[in-house]
Image (cartoon, rainbow, N blue to C red; front, side, top):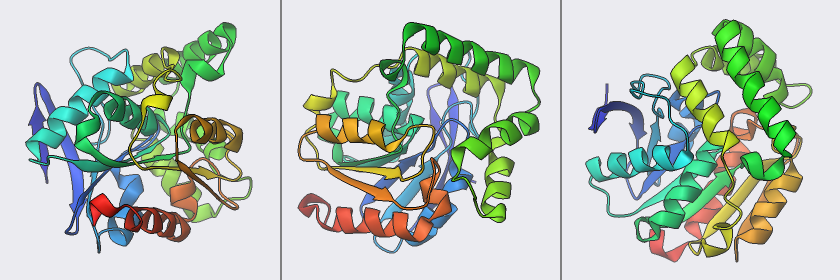
Length: 267
């Protein structure tokens, strides 16, 4: 199994294909296993690499819980350097989009193109009271509920109102693998997240994707990212929720390939 040592962390990743590198960053309740249809569908043109973030999947836990997505992005930088890539395309979903945006803002010379899917604004989208409520709710849930219980509670909100039962079952299986240190690290990072000031500085080709029926980070949120990132492209996927890439992987992959094939630097 492929692991890379990034400082004190063992980072696990899945890799398929040949061609320019496309690094995929999962969301709060997921890990690299959720990207299997992208690893298959995008690998004919790209080297597709899906990591397990620190504290997730088969990657090791950080020694202490993280507080900001900047810390995740620093690990990502070390991960990319260990892979010996000078530049990459980043595809981030939900909290993965926050990691990708931070990385792109601080290390723009390392990014050929950026794709954010069902992106989150975190604290920037909430009142102080609601932000604190969500943090406390997340911390209480991970302390009091078994992972399978939390998966049952959360996954139904991440999918469209009438999801395919097999997709829901798989999403719950993956969500039930969450670990306290990783989950708390993301909860802390979402609580402090406000990237509104950096969005206008993003100057790489950018695609914004959102599930039409996303109830977690709705289309109106993705519209804000689209309007704030100059010359970005915005596409919604009909009939899908927050986990649009799992609910309609064929359409998701088509959108990604169409966009990347239009970016000259990647060819």
